[in-house]
Image (tube, rainbow, N blue to C red):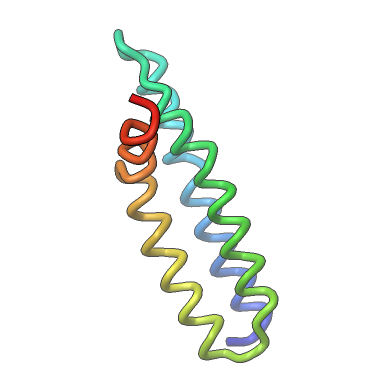
Length: 93
């Protein structure tokens, strides 16, 4: 994967994450029972994205970049659709 395409794909993922996170934060704030697990999941989503971006940036081979991009997409999808809040509930509640 050329460097330019690699950066564009990761920025597109970030652009998708931002409105979804804002919508989740708004929904959590407007609910009668606010969950700190949702806030944890939203904040750590950006940490996960940055970690995977750094891993992809450190790899020079195209195959490794594609593999790590797919792994990051899968992990971020799972984390944002309830995995992060479930992890918080498992540890702290």
